[in-house]
Image 1: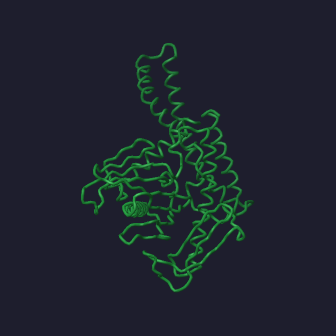
Image 2: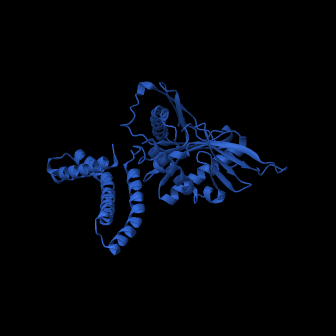
Image 3: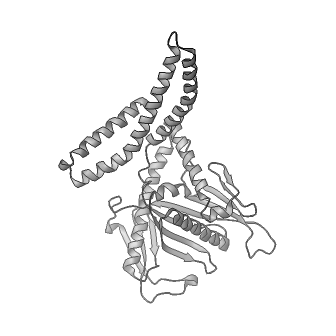
Length: 357
């Protein structure tokens, strides 16, 4: 479908929705909500369509003025100057419209479950996992998102074997979805007397939060085990069987939760994570099918893919998917400069999807 056809389609759909909403008395509350949301999505696209049409018309008028026989030389000169000004404006406006017309990831507006796990590197990997978890916590604070820690398994020296959080707010998944993968750190550990640089890694997973309506989990598909919660070193931290381990038998996905003293609360948290993992597994399967015919995506989405290196001696952060290097390591880990990486990844993804379209 051409850009002109798409523009007409957008304007026609906006008019159709506005007509339906003007007769809201005949609509159910669900229909009213659905149409209002669609109008909110369509309106900025329709406004950009009008901008493109106005610029295209002004450019056509200026070109016609030059082509007319016996045109006044001064008027022709003015028209040429107008064309020189309008042409790049139209190109920019059409590009902005094409971005707005790209199919949206339906999960972009969802909240997210963040999981950070220490990988290779022992204690140093666990310390790095804690650094990453803190980076996302500070990023969430900057955006005004709610960052709810669901579970942290500590090493006893300030490191995290694994940590999970529920992040809620506007467009959380849209901003963080490219963070999934293996993050590598290169630095001299505090315990290293010889000054040797060690390489360690941590794995980040960002899952779109699934609602009950998205994933139907049958009780018969679950095996639920309860046990006593334990702290660093394995010592018991509770005298009752409040910790919960849930296994989803069809997929083999296992979730444990022990942060709360209440077994009921631990089960509720575990079920939220379980739904997110099942939903994410299905999403990954669908993406893999689409990726088979799409070469220019930002990374493979594979959790085992090394996506970024944090080099402390050089103060450098390099994202390997787009070959972006920033010498702002401290600011990135502080959550202040991570936007530069996220924005670059989003732009690359948009460019790839435009090329595919």
